[in-house]
Image (cartoon, rainbow, N blue to C red; front, top):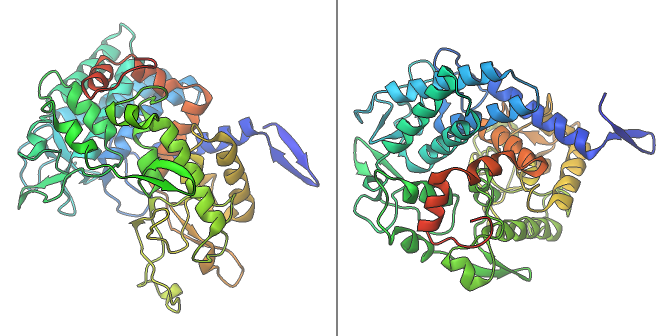
Length: 436
């Protein structure tokens, strides 16, 4: 039984028991949402959901965690990893509208059964990077001298080395955000601070198709440094921006040129981002229900939209699936419990307080201990339950699982610190100090 501590008549789990329960429940998503024939993972638990290549990346990192925690046999984890890695190796790379990918990149959303592109989605540079990061972490963990684990490492190497990162610049100064067979490269790139550090690190570390040397500096030249609520801060509004690359890379104490000049690092910046989120919720400028110092977490995720009949009388604009952010918005009163908890490595005290507080006040946002993508207390039903997004999203479960593990044991960080492509990429982008 989980350890409990007494609060009045309510027996609350200890921090360790709370995190263990949430982490194991998050891992359950990857068992429930997989197609065992090809290893692809559904983007959401909703009916007929396609696969998201980024969610597959989180799954590949989740399997080693499950092995370490005794939730899955090593042989099973290897089998699942091999299945999906073989799929991507053998996938259609012609770049046609019905293919799986092109130039080593993959379309953002794939048919869960066939692996073909769906929804006319873009060839996604960042989502491919998250997939490759997950594959590399699997390759760093499964190091046994067996035929299966040897093949796994060879597959990871094949997938990484064939990605043509330089092509993804499309002749521009920075990496393009996507490409479509119907129109070529999208007209916008990875400009401004965002979740793309892991993308640039992988692209710079490639021994086969690296970016040009000035590409990373061209990206950091688009950064926006601000002072918000007394915090000097590299601005990005949604919390996921401050978390996703950190799921794989330990940025504590290492600095690129930009951060050396600011006497900061990206880990510290994510800590400040968490504090700014908390302060924003405490100030609650739009007077949304539920917001306070222990109820925060604006990020990319699902929320109510103006088209939903159950919120037809709401006067304020509702954004549906959107990247909500602090302090400039958009904000419609929708929070994500997973976003606050995923700040655990940066700001454990406030993240744990938020997780406990939101879980007590809005238990409806958790189903079978898995977080919904978003909940909105301002749109409470007649029984005073907050509006809750339907289904579960794989990205939410993945970031919760990985950030809890990095907080508890640093497993993924330790694996990736030993990955030569990561260290090479970091050095080529100008990172120095710390564990480097």
